[in-house]
Amino acid sequence: MLVITAAAYSQEQPQPQIQVKGPAPVAISMAVVSMPAVEPVLGDALRLYRRGRFEDAAAKYEAILKQDSNSAEAYAGAARCYLKQEKIQEAYKSAAKAVKTAPDSQVAHVALGEVYFRQGKMHDAEDEFLKVKNSAAPEARAYLGLARVYSAISMHAGAKKLLEEAHALDPDDPEILWRWLNTLEPAERVKALTAYLSAASIDDAGLLAGYKGYLESLKRQEKLPARECKLMAGPASMETYLWPMFLSPPYIGGYGLDVKVNGHKSRLLLDTGNSGILLGPRAAERAGILPRTQTKIMGIGDKGDSDLYIGYADSIKIGPLEFRNCPVAVAPKEKTGHDGLVGTDLFSHYLVTLDFPGRVFRLSELPRRPDDPPEAGQAVTGVASSMRAEAGNHGPVQDAQDQDAQSQDAQDKDRYVAREMEDYTTVFRFDHMLLVPTTLNGFPPKLFLMDTGSDHNYISLQAAREVTKVHED
Image 1 (cartoon, rainbow, N blue to C red):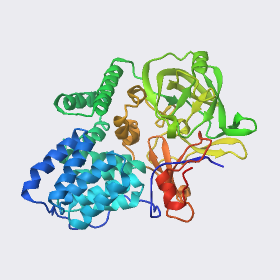
Image 2: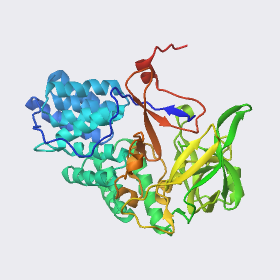
Image 3: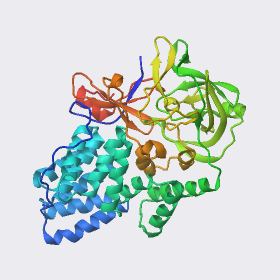
Image 4: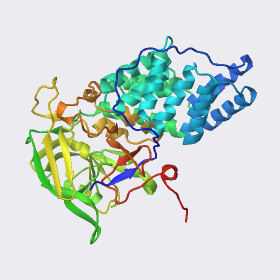
């Protein structure tokens, strides 16, 4: 069995395989119905939104709607603010009202697409964004929305091109700017981010601190020797034992792998919700991992964020595999109950099979991409790069990084699906996290986070209420 942890994403329609090719262009105009006196206030509301003052911006949009209940742009703006405030149902109602009020409004369709994306309705989101992209006067956030969808299905080249087009249309949109920045090489990223922060007005202290922290980490990285985690030559396939990791006997909380870090053995919990390797302080001390920078790790549910530091391991061995020069996160306290965690993204060059009943961890050779030459040492694109690891999690900044802070090599390629893998279930990837369409009680699918490090199944209260009766005791 595979432990699956629920994420707070709602999905009312089955997930088809998303096709990158869009439908034929449709006529979408700029028909936003609003009174002339409202226009300056709409501009004020947008400026508040772009400065991170989402509550104030929402209040402005709501005031506009009291004056003009037919302002599709105000409904759309309010929906976007509600998304930032995690008011998903209110966001959907507002976006749907925008489309009903002005069916030809670009901003209305984009806002509805953004709500669909947040609900996990990827196909519906793509349709809304494509309607606008294929219109006579496309809107920048439609390109942004499509880039987020395509990034989630590993169409990295297509997503990068869309971000470039979005930035060309509206370079002042901070969400577009941030994702576009993450397509640049580090040196160019530093220049662009420095220029942006010198001119931007950001009232959200957390957002501003995130931007500044990320910029400082990039500057530190420029001064250090380049380091890239690489898988050295290894076997085409391998199997090893999955060790049961007990909460307290006989209760199994997960399964682990024996890992040698700098020649010192540790047993790490196999955790698909973790990226790379996280060590507890004792295991890190045994391996001689020295701190290089401070950062945070996100928690699921009520675990919250945890402080940790990043160091480097000269060698990581798992069975016959060896990785060299890899970032390793270290928790300051023993928080996991084990020596640490190992994420499956470390094995991104293989097809990974987790056979929990048989207690077998199996790696098989992936079908080679037609354009991939053989390499003696392969960069591990699934593991956080040194730049990414040192940037850490800065709250709001992470929302933009989760899809776009991939290695440059990964960004430049679209996914390749070999013929023998065409009947595999489509999943959606946000950085190292995999979201799987899952049906509950016969209702339309919802997206669940696959988290083998969890010892329970979780579902959001809102999603639970949609599929069953909920009693609060």
